Image (tube, rainbow, N blue to C red; front, side, top):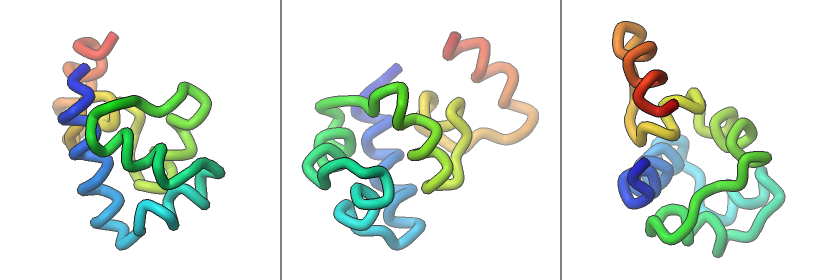
Length: 83
């Protein structure tokens, strides 16, 4: 798991949804500094925030952990790598 890659992915997906860090943080009930920390690769979302974050960004948990969008055919392979 590459935190920097995942952080960049979170940032790009947040921007794709046209959310500011503040808007995303409010939806998740956390501070915008926490979002900034994730996006710089200096931290990772707590387990309890994975599903809410994925739901807000329209991602699967597997995509979040991989740090990239995954096609249906790649899904099983990436899931096994992440386990």
